Length: 303
Length: 303
Image 1 (cartoon, one colour):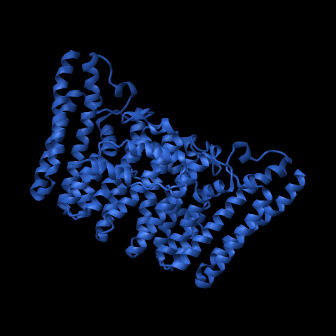
Image 2 (cartoon, helix red, strand yellow):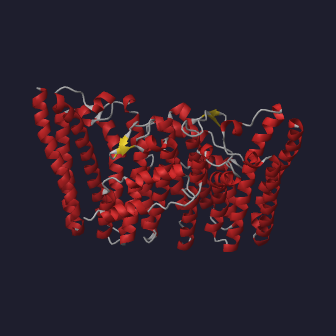
Image 3 (cartoon, chains in turn orange, yellow):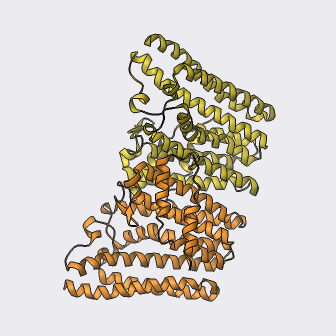
């Protein structure tokens, strides 16, 4: 897929008034010049096409979700949250432009993202608009992303169980995947049955990616030195492989992928145009296979 | 006007899921228990009634704007911005619950505010919905509030002129007054002519309140000790009385009030039900008279 159109849209969809304060402008330009892999807008765009949304609306919704994601990273990186200094191979915005400019830039992306979302759904019938906005509010708000982030930051004070790590993954990882997959289908008029299946695919994939990340963190440290505690363990960060052990986490990963596959097969049967999602599923499988391999190597090294 | 219904709505319109992280929940409860004077929702509610919006929609829009305002205060108070420790007679949220919880709470209010705004405008015809959302986006975003806040924070690096202090006041003070006065009229179907006049009233009042605040800061210090520099001067904060001098600022205040009066008289002629705005204008006049008095006393004390 040609990713240049997404890069162009990412850079162009945030209007920059001429009288903008140079500090805020600098921060915004820095972010716009350093986009991520833009996987979300690509998923949204193709989902939107499969369900008959216009190309313009698909792109608006895709960039809107990417801007929400961008804003969440700007906040995550702040000293009072993850205290990161680098992002996408360059200095974090708050390092280069100050914390207040990073916060105001994040709010600018959020404000624009809501406006673009509204524009993308404006042509849909009232009932679908209502459902789409309720779905967005829930997954971005205290029922989703914000709660996930808060639990994540306060993990040290919470029980280190699978329930807690799942709740965090549901809020932080699953929410945005859900929005990218379900929202365009919902706006485009997918059936209740399809929407339920898409919601489950997003759930299983989101949880899979989180288990994968946690396994990588745990296994890499073990493979590298045979005894270095993982970064998550050292910082007391949520990690399901630490909470339930590597073997159980690997079993869980396989189970989540199987469940996602089942839903996806049914969906492709109902709507062949969403077969592009199988490519994402292949990436997931490849990563899972790598981790599985490492898991044996690492267990060998530790033993 | 019975303010209890606004207090109740302010406390009730933010849904709190049962599985919410206790840190974020604590921060949100703290804010909801300490509302401000709720003048914005009262204006919105009465404007909405004058222009035939339903009571429910008027209240939703009013609380939405108050939530946007609340979020802006949570951010303003952060150490990287105004570094405040007290707000509304109690400790700031970031002091009691940490910076990250204050930020996540602010984002929860913003997310809810957009959802309430959408709900409030959903019954309006498409063209009005579009105009209302564009007006909201502009005044909350880089064209309004965010730019005002950025200029305000970086004032020390900018020319200390009336142009700069005006730009800051337009962003920080005028934007939210504009939204409270113009949005309900726009959604309710006011004519282009009325909307232009309301926009001007909001502009003149917003600037008046800013000049008043700046004069109070400058004159109080002078009246109290005869020589203490004002707080704004000591901290190098934007202040129009410092930028153009007290006498010019007093002249400007009188002029702004006269201009606002002219627009308001025309509006009451067009739509008698907005006469409630005259009460706000009386408050403004009373405050201006007090400052005028202090201005003579203070100049006496300094002389």
